[in-house]
Image 1 (spheres, one colour):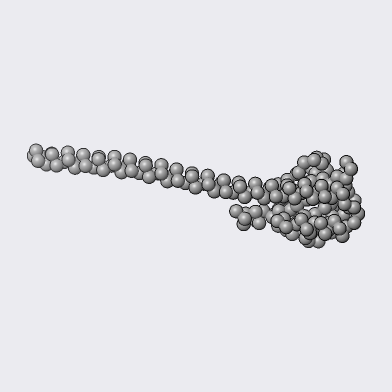
Image 2: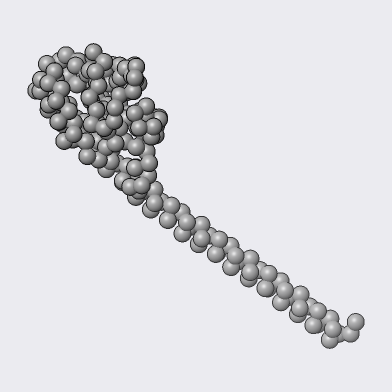
Length: 179
C-alpha cells in the first residue's frame, strides 16, 4: 500500500468513527427527549384522570351525606316518600337505594332479584358496622343490572338508632367514559 492509500484509509476510518459517534449522541438525545415527553404526557393524563375521579368521589360522598341527613328527619316507613327522595338525588349515579333492617330495599332503578337480601351484602354490613363512615366496595357485578359497579354506602341513623343503609352505585363503564 502506498502512502496515499494509507492516508485515504485513515481518513475513511476517522469519518466512519465521527459519523458513528455523532449518530450515537443524536440517538441518545432523541431517546431522552421522547422519554421526557412521554413522561410529561402520562403525568398530565394521570392528573386529569385523578381530577375527574376526585370530582366524582366528592359528588357521591356529598350526595350520600346530605341525603342521610335529610332522611334523619323523614318517616322511613313512608316508602313512596323515600322513593321520591331517591329519584330526586339519583342523578350522576347508576342507582341510589335504601335498604332497611327488615330486608326491604327501595331502588331508583331496577327490580329486586328473587331471594335478594341487602343485609347480606358487603356494602350494607360495612355501613352498619361503621355508621359514621362511607364505605366503598371493590368493583363487582351488580345482581340488578349485570354491570360492573362500585357501591358507596352510608348508615341511616335516626336519633342515634340504626335504621338502614343508603347506597349509590356507580358503573365502572360510566366512570371510564367520563375520563
